[in-house]
Length: 396
Ligand code: TTP
Ligand code: MG
Image: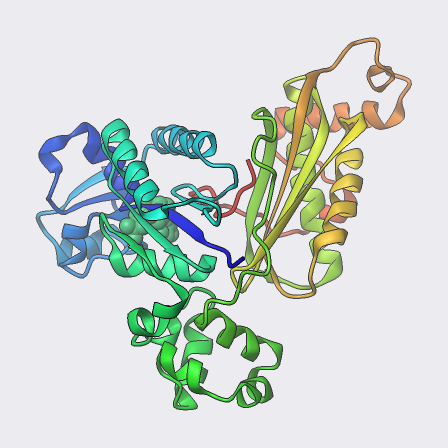
């Protein structure tokens, strides 16, 4: 049976969270900015402000030039995380298979849902009534088509695109509007005279693979809604309590050693938090996302709990090697779940245990002098990573 995927994506999410508490701003140009007021950028922009050409990522001084009447509100990450969690919790209770893709997007497998449009309307009503935040729902035979259905019907939309309607409804879109085909590949396709989704349907696959290799076939599959290879991730119903960390890398990485280094860095972050909260975990999840929008995740439970960074790292690497494809990596996430308090009599808390002693000492130094003051040799010289928002596709 063909897959049916629903994407729930909040409209102007950060702005909507703020407007929910200030109804007077509804229908007005509003932006949420991060960083210092002067010199910061807008992370989220209301649809009214978009009419003035204001876009997410623009510096605030430019935003004010384009739209002098705009209300700019400093970001309140905790508020957005709380609303996001509550919305995702509702979706996870309502549906069997939910993949939380970013702070405001979730993919849901609705293959076995009798009337996805009606259910989509229920979801929209419930979220709007409960959180006073608008949203759009796209439904399609693949994640990419669900995303495109969502994009073309934003804001406050609901659209299903069936396989037989793909050309009718999306054929006119430019190739770079297909998620996964970036500006650069879009430009290369255009230089070959392939400008629209319909052009991709019609072009000979051989021509594409000669120019782009395997990615050429993939471009065509994306356009035709055939990217249903997997519907991923963590089983829904994985224990709620977990400690995880994921990062979008400063650039896509392909080098084996670098991937290992970043994985160790993530495990160190997770390990430190486990030790700080004096908990250990009987399960671990690893999630990977590639430059091309695809990704995969895997979880395992163990009889023996994970506690030290090296234990977490060894398990994470083992799982990563089972799912990793050889293509540039954009994001890795590591999360330890099935948490339990550390019992003092456990051998891992025995001070004779060299590994635990070493890690406690490292933690102490880093607690006093700042993160990663003392690093494992593998992490020396690694570029540090910062980001303002939770990256997309975090396993929770
Ligand atoms: P998006 O879903 O990309 O944007 P949006 O919800 O504001 O607007 P749309 O209606 O087009 O979906 O991102 C979700 C939130 O993530 C967004 O409200 C703000 C935050 N965000 C950033 O902080 N930085 C960014 O670069 C992007 C793209 C989003
Ligand atoms: Mg959104």
